[in-house]
Image (cartoon, rainbow, N blue to C red):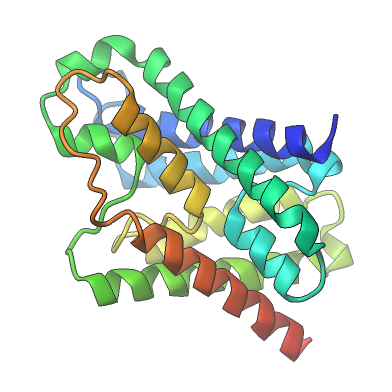
Length: 234
């Protein structure tokens, strides 16, 4: 398997399991309906851990353009590979969202809340304030990237890194995710948002494109700054 396919498959798994837990919690008549933020936080953490275990040996399991760009910014990843990785991540995220749509097919019509349907695919702020929303995504992704590099640099975690990274995602979600839904990954937000716009989802409403740039720019800036900060300090 090539790194391109590793990133594509890994990101697909990430979205199937991550967006899947959101769908289970927010869509009507799901057996997991209303099980809450804690379930979503742990579901996303496990999604990341499983995806990283699945393809880490193939591509390094970036699964996130912010990680790819951050690694390239500090010389730990070749710039000429960046477009290939981001393309794979975007395709994988889109396809993962399609799988979630198919899996929950009867539940879209049963769910009247358009915001809940969009929440399965993409993030939205709890309070819409562009500057604060952008800052939240930057802070969360800074913490994520800085911590990711720290985890990877400690030999005590050999073999356990994906599991620990999963708990990092849980921690960020519980501590920092309440403001914007913690995209911390442009592909995770944009790929499924495109799927939401294109798929024939019953009563879906708007894909909220006016907000879509925030979970792209915020994570990219935060991820690069987090990587640079770690590289400077260590």
